[in-house]
Image (cartoon, protein in one colour):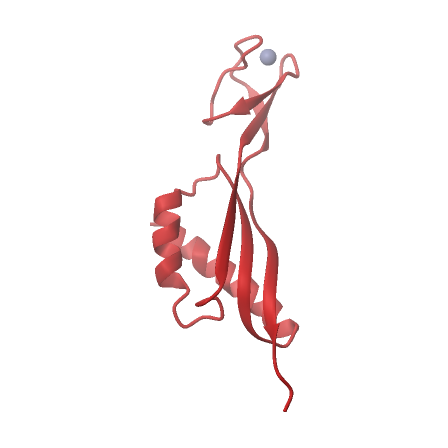
Length: 118
Ligand SMILES: [Zn+2]
């Protein structure tokens, strides 16, 4: 299950950012995941639940936006919605298209709790 390593990687990046900002914890994280990425949502949720334990994200609210796949035909330049990789162009039927959206995996935003100075 490669989702767990992806989750751990996200946690690592988020914690580094939070520490840089001298945060006490992370209260929310917003992710963008392309529907054409190799991430399987159910497996990702499962991996997340386990991966965040004892991390700064343990109690963070997670907002996940799944981004639709979008391709551009190499032959006729038509842009179209892609539900799967290797989907033919609806205009000319060509299989060679460029994926322009839907493969991303990004941390869109982080909300952090600042340390309370005493
Ligand atoms: Zn085409």
